[in-house]
Image 1: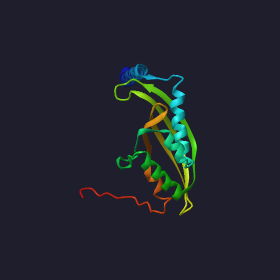
Image 2: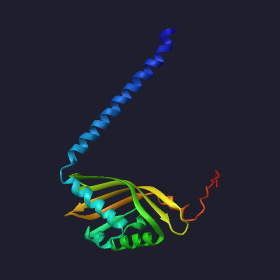
Image 3: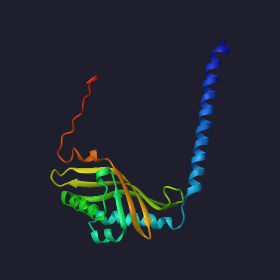
Length: 187
């Protein structure tokens, strides 16, 4: 009887051990893949700084500096497909932001730079994770939201910028009512 009760426990422990070993192996393979393609050199700080300076210029409404940090073939992507733009459109969008919002600031930002030799991502990159805060002038409500930026840097300028943030953060503070959608089965 005691052997029968212990068998499921032994089997569960064995399965859990196999799962753990499998996860460790996948993690080791991922680390080796990163080592194969990604290099963090002293120059990596430069790529992160270019992105940090670019974000600071947009936040401060310094359009001349923003333009000086953008490559001639600059393209911004996101957060939605329709939001993709060149430098002129990006600046126009930020000018609208500054007209609608006050106290635009970075609450926190963590930059990182690296170089990649992977076939689809070859080049120098800057990443930045952070939190933005701004107050909608019409309602006086403050919006605080996380963001992530990915920038490809060429010759000290941003060639490609991907930005990711949740647009729904703006619905309530802009005076809109948030309504929960109800779905009914079979309709």
